[in-house]
Image 1: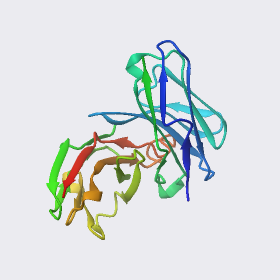
Image 2: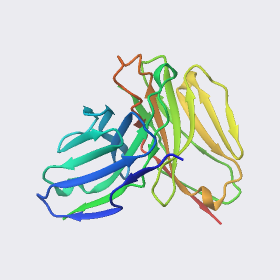
Image 3: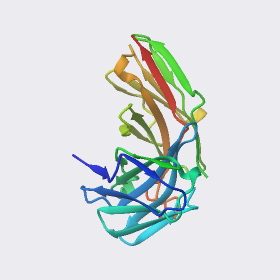
Image 4: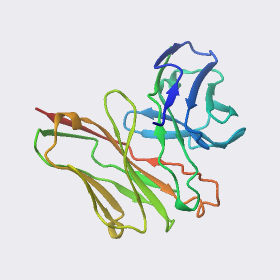
Length: 116
Length: 121
């Protein structure tokens, strides 16, 4: 079974703090993704990575950075947390589908982050 | 750019009713993939189905069925004889072929806004 785990289910931080959200997958997937989920907006892609040390911006990268030093681990970093970053953060991974197209994404349970 | 629209924000039905969740997509790519995911109250998204753009056959899996129509750019999801356990948020998503996107999309998903389905006993 594919498993994607996230370091925390709930997190409360103060404005200005540096926040690290960790994601680990155990299926040797090439691709990893970070989304945020807000009511009425669905899931929006923040960053993704298709290989170790490789990263690409998603649709809403401002205020975030990422790190992928090992294939199984993808970290999301909020350099200076702000209240508008209060949200549910979801990590996902998928295999490289190649010519067959995108593999389905497998999601972690999410981290609900509150910034006070 | 890709876009997915789920116009129904919330749907409420009584158990055993049939319910259809609408999904309309926009893309200029000729090769693309459509997905449905379910997010139960526990929060973890669960994959339900993937269809590619060159296969318009409808699909049935138990009480679930999907109707893909390229002519109307729609990929609707029907639950027959709904049950309380079907209560969840359902997301439709679109991914374009990595080749069409210059090899850099790597299976990025564009999600719709989600439809909250509540099935009452």
